[in-house]
Image 1 (spheres, rainbow, N blue to C red):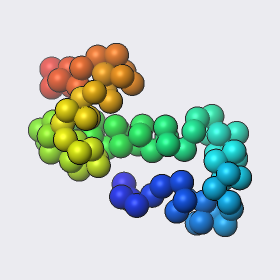
Image 2: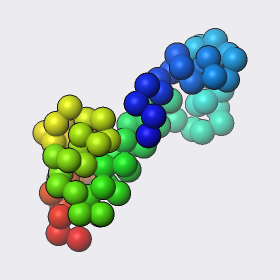
Image 3: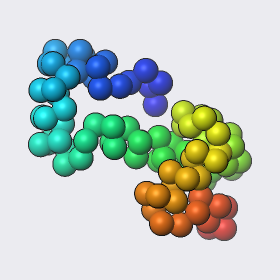
Image 4: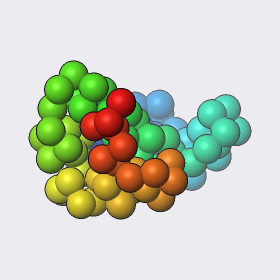
Length: 88
């Protein structure tokens, strides 16, 4: 995942203002851009864990500050602890 992809950069790439890009993104995708980016980061981490990475390595590779931040986010989004992935 591209580390500097944020709303401003995405809007610039699309040649739109941030507000217009944000509005169109929600209309087309169905969720806010920041939420989409968070989901993408979670999926990058999940794929890393599935490939054998530790929670910490997967979290760092997905752009989380540490495994605790990844674990809190995972629990909030999915309702189960991230350590659940290690049991699958």
